[in-house]
Amino acid sequence: MITFKGTPVTLEDKYINVGDSAPDFHLTNKELKEITLKDTSGKRIFVIVPSVDTPVCDREVRRFNEEAAKLNNVSIYVVSMDLPFAQSRWCGSAGIDKVTILSDYKNRDFGKNYGVYIKELGLLTRAIIIVDENNKVSYVEYCNEVSSEPDYEAALNAVK
Image (cartoon, rainbow, N blue to C red; front, side, top):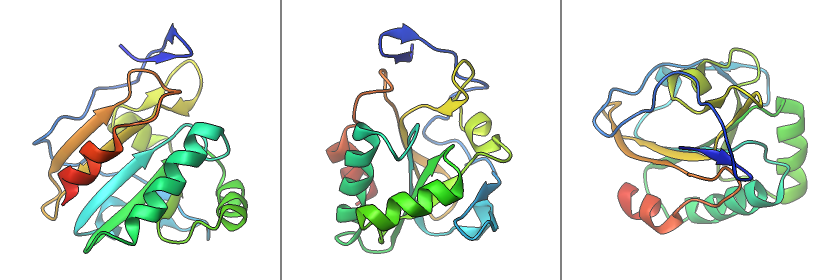
């Protein structure tokens, strides 16, 4: 069960599990270009957050931006429902430059295909999904409480 500030929420579609093939998606980058699964490759960490412009998400994205410099051959993608313009503004002011920020505002298929779209809020729940070089899911963490931070060490150890 996933909660937002203690209240249960409904995630649309199904959870992703370790061993699943990574579903395709259509996300939007800061240049308003569509990004799909095939536009990504290698080991990938998808850091899913409700909004980059909140205190918990801010800490989480900053942490993964810092960790990105220490990881070899791993791409980190932060996905939220924020508009690309807001994501770009926030990244500029926060000095975020080692992770790629992508938006699911347009199609919402990432949220639904990866089981992270919160029906009641129109936001994504907090989760970490790692996809390997063969497009297989190798690690999944859905945070039980949307306002809680993920287990950074478990995710980073899983990708190493």
